[in-house]
Length: 331
Image (tube, rainbow, N blue to C red; front, side, top):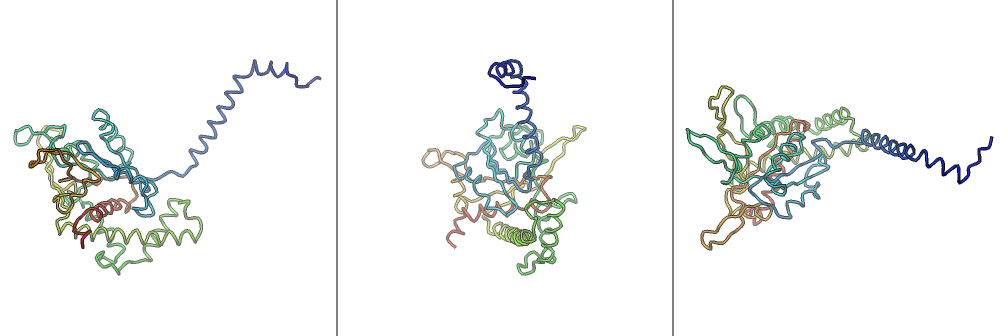
């Protein structure tokens, strides 16, 4: 049998089988793509930190720089993203926000507590226009951490206290009371349960234990600093009353603390405007100026984040205060 490959035979094969060859190559590429996709290590919600800016306020380049600064957070955070919803325009911003919240990509939200929101609500029989903060809360109330305790439920701050007390023998305010053995025990159990590929050797595990100790210590310091900043008035908790109706059409009001006012006083936290701001008319000069007065931060309740790592978000708050508070800079 003559099986010699000639130009004529090769030409005939390609003429009749070229489509099969292309499909085979495409199928091979698809198979390998699926293999890499299914075997690759995926970023968990606790390993990413999403910073968002709501409609009504603008951001500077400093806001976008967060994407290149994972070192601002603990070792667990591997990826940081920053998204300004204003870039998408009003038409698509709400769709994007709902998608990000549904996929647990948002951790904190900048939103100005100023007039201009899109929604209207009824209060004492009167129709009122929502502020941007109210606008966000009415739309995404279910995703906002309640900071205070209410209705038998412990708020974000109480949850953080109890989490830290578990590692500080019941008193997180005692900086020297850390139970390092408990940190190590919990870390080893978590790494084993999650089958964390970062910790395959004892050397890597020991480094992870030290990193986790630093994480717990940083959370403790963040909570201590947070209450100090509240006491000094650098920041404030913002109370809101949301007016809903139940399934029977009856009024149902919810009053609580759902956000942190990062700039209640421009003399101390006014420099926050170099990162996030809105524009107003200066009463003296009648010229437009930038301000961050009453710029709030909502802590997002991400149910998929592994327990304990949600307190990374308070560290972001205290970092902002240390970065922009005029009194801390001069101290």
